[in-house]
Length: 210
Image (cartoon, rainbow, N blue to C red; front, side, top):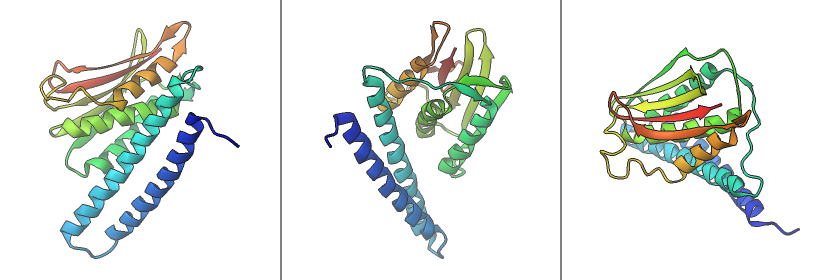
């Protein structure tokens, strides 16, 4: 049976992801051992990198799907935005390792909204990874309901988009986030995303869903 390029990518990425999962599992076992602090820190860093590589592979495969003739399609279902942020916060705290405070702001979140949870979480994961690179001491994960729809955001207290060379260049990340946003449509209105300087300082990423 022959495979087209997208199917071949999917097969290779699936295999690599499985091997990375085994690597991450073995590294996690090292943390349970009585190791010197330096060795433990190296194991933690290696585990984080394995997770980061896995995420990049998923980003790439998702963008390949977006480039197909049918494009990336969101399967919108009812979900609770505040709970999605809680899951993202737990992942961010694990990656930050206490170096950065990660908080959430869901005071203005609706009880539910319709979106593709998997795709939205994938986009916010990408924004969160980027924020971890540049944040000084704090990252805020938030969601608000606006006149145009729902807005998820990731804010950091780093130097801002324009202040740091390469800070606005997230490669696959920004392209993925835009593809996820545009995959969400409601009554002819399409979603969009933006990465910009925050008026309070630092950078802010916004994912707008109709």
